[in-house]
Length: 311
Image 1: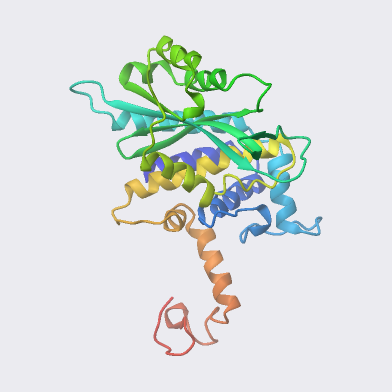
Image 2 (image 1 turned 90 degrees about the vertical axis):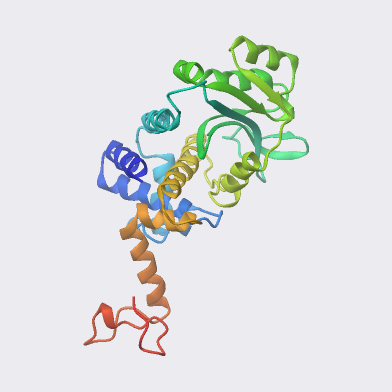
């Protein structure tokens, strides 16, 4: 939990104004709600902008597409904290621990022709194709990097995968026995030779539930494919914030003493004030909030019937 809170505080400190900080909090909270369909217009916490007819949706869309904030610095900060968490988790005695570097090709299906985005067909699917790397060590799951593959006719998929693996810091290769677990799409002689030249071990075509679970969670719960942006910058920022939300929630769940902590419960611990605002608004729509005149919060009745349940 301290790691997640520290990273969140450090990231918010990067943003140059309270308005941008509020926008980032609203977007991360939206991604952490776990319904898998996060779009700016779904936010319940960002105050509407007066100069736009669609208020909060327009303000958050500008956060993705127009406002100047240091995206690369945010990525470096998140990676640095992830490296520290990984270093703390590895044993200092005995043989080198194993680090799984999972490499997969993820297709985010889209409809229509979005000229600003490098969409293409692959295996009968039209959309944005991402080479994604994430790290597995014990209970730690760390999204690391991604690159866009533009489809056939562009740079080879093997070369893209090797560039992703080259982004691993040298200390990581020295401290761990790194095993690359790759999708069959990467199973070429060029890729296997390149992995050996990097001093890594490769297993192609290996499938594990824990590996598949990450990508399913990213799509179904953290809205990885739900970017509604039409600019390359907006899409890139969305593809950065979605794994960041996963990383924060994952660290909260690891630090939680409660078994089965949900993503929404993790969000509640990271953003207690915005979550309380959402809950009060939902209760208000049900006619259960605020408490009747003359009664305090301790006397509020949630069901509106029994008069005994507390908020």
